Image (cartoon, rainbow, N blue to C red; front, side, top):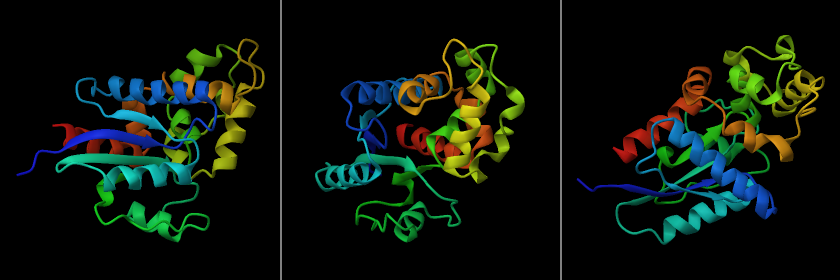
Length: 207
């Protein structure tokens, strides 16, 4: 049996800003460490836009050594109705991505429907970050996050944090990765089956 090593995790996020990409790498690295994957976790590559993340992932697969693996993590950007993530990105307008020959379903993972969904999974992290002004009653129940469109998830975060005096209203560039560092992977996995699938894949491949 071939021993696999997950070398890189290509993630959507960070835009074209070097400082944001650094925050993105740190946030996803800390999230994996908090999930107990501190020993052999992959190196996070913050790719900016989703198309660039897909392109870099495909290049990495083409140049991979036998037994080495790369993973791709992007926003779903829409409800996921297929059990196959590759079918989702193939059929979604704006993507039309083909599954690379060396990739299986286990190589592609989706934040359903966006990274803000992951932030909404952990109210304790939101309270810790925003402070006492956070309006809990404006937040969705964690189990509803995967059915929530991106625009609604963003709107609920902004509305709930509007009264907060220390951080102010949620701002994606200023707050998203700092918040992700605080998210409890256990709470995230309980709220999001697709997030649980991601962590299970990492655990399996790094075992």
